Length: 242
Image 1 (spheres, rainbow, N blue to C red):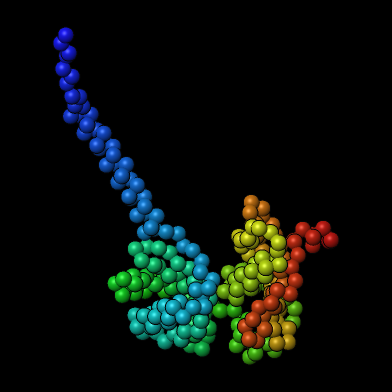
Image 2 (spheres, rainbow, N blue to C red):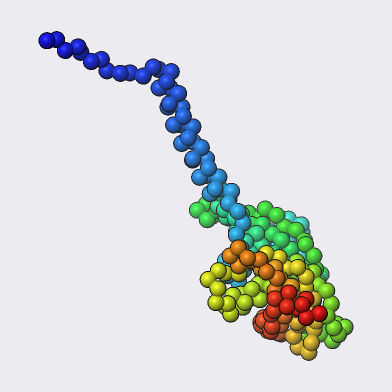
């Protein structure tokens, strides 16, 4: 009995090439996707970084570089807000206060850092507005100049943002919820100077899990710059009582 010899199977060259091409394209897509997610990351807030020595140094660097380029004489005061973005290194988005010709102003700066190359570069520096009069130093010097009563203040003001962040943090500390509060929007803000502190009446839109809610908070800021959440309540409680 003769057994027919089996011949090894070799795929056609065209089919083999097509399969190999698919594998290579898939691998390349995954690699490109991974690189994109690493290189072009979204901005992330860094509340703690705003008060760190590293961020303070970056802000001073930004002011110094701006002064050199524009032959300006800005004097750095403090960092108000700090965000980071991964872009072949780290792009630091800084909101800072600086004094120009005796007036305190707010600026936004972008500083690109590549630690492994000892590289640091100021990408952008622009003026966004005057600083609020409710700063630590101004409260002591100008408290007698403000008219009594509440007055509207910009929701994007750095001090208003600080007051809102403190309110959210305090609300979270008092909450028993497993879901953290997330600040979605500062809807409106008012401020009033009373004796030696400023009061901020802020309406916040918050998110907790999948639920969104509006909270009205009153935050006080003293001469030392410390914030205290004085009171808070859901906005619908106030509406229903009127």
